[in-house]
Every structure is written in structure tokens, then in C-alpha cells.
Length: 97
Image (cartoon, rainbow, N blue to C red; front, side, top):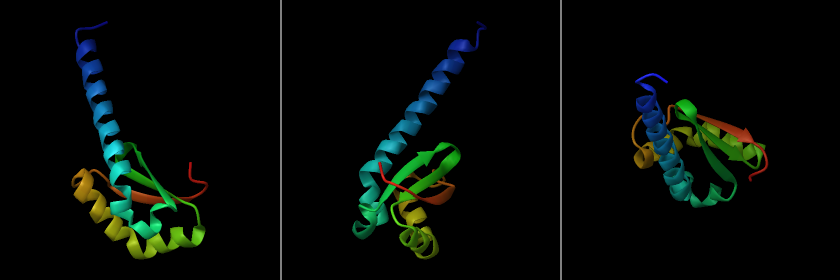
């Protein structure tokens, strides 16, 4: 172990805590971000490097969200998490867990 090991561990722990906090905030504000009509059909998953993966239970809805609401979802997410927290949004169709 070198002299930087404790510093690196501390930094990684702090970064991990920040990601967990953002994920928690995203989950608690998701209906506000996505809208009541889509809340029960979607589930957010914040991934590394600022990618927001939105799981959608219907392919038609996923297409509509991508085409009509992408900008709105990004703007609302930035209002909750801060500007630059999400750099990219992708929509995936699948079972919500």
C-alpha cells in the first residue's frame, strides 16, 4: 500500500455516495419528472457517466417518450439532479422490476 491508498479509497467512497444520493433523489422525484400518466409504465436507472436508462413496459410508449418528450424529461431531470448530471437518456423496453 502506497501513501495515496487511503486518499483514493476515500475519494471512491465519496463518489459512490454521491451516485447513490442522485439515484435516490431520482427515484423519489420520478413521477414529477416523467409525469403521472407515465410513472407506472416507466422506471429510471441512473448509470455511470451520466446516462439515464428509462425502462418502459411498452414499445409504443418508449417510442413516444423518445420522440416527443426526450427534451422535457432531460430538462426536468436537470432541475432535480442539477445541470450536467444526465448527459444522455436511453429508453429500453422490458419488464419493470
